[in-house]
Image (cartoon, rainbow, N blue to C red):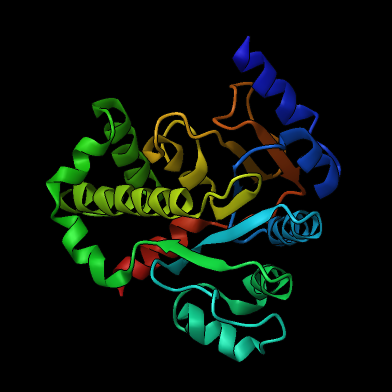
Length: 258
């Protein structure tokens, strides 16, 4: 029955952010998944932030795109974007384009809501790769699915010896984001986490690292209609127009040849 309800949600998603919030609230934690190259997904995030802030219900905006240890708590609402980027450690070379995510960040800042980094700091990634204790954060079944996902997402070109270390980084990132959102929980309000779909899914990502009993809702944004009838690992799937075809594997193989 639960699966059927989830599939139903996926095919009857609301048409705007207000309707979405009416469906998922109240909840102390709302996870918004995205495809990083789908601009409609960042538009949805900005609208959700604006609507929650206008209601006085937004406790914090936690982002995968910012490392833990960075936040905007000390900044005034009218701060300029350059100071916001400095506070968040947002670099031109960090891999996350400011023109894409800046409007989401600034919607929170202008509302007086803190933006908080949730991701594992780059300085800790090498240590995470060799930390076998991370393997025990999830079940063996989940661990294997994570490893299979790393292998598949790298189109089979990643050396086999790097699969386990790369999987530990994924686990460490999920664990870091879970800790961050947990610390940000505020009674009567909602913490919003913005991250890739792989990080928010109930069966593999951040939800597995949350304290038992912490209520949360997961919304995954997907470009293009669902390709099968399998219940999504989320409370709701927000579908947007399909993206232009792109051969990700060809691009990746070219990178590995360099």
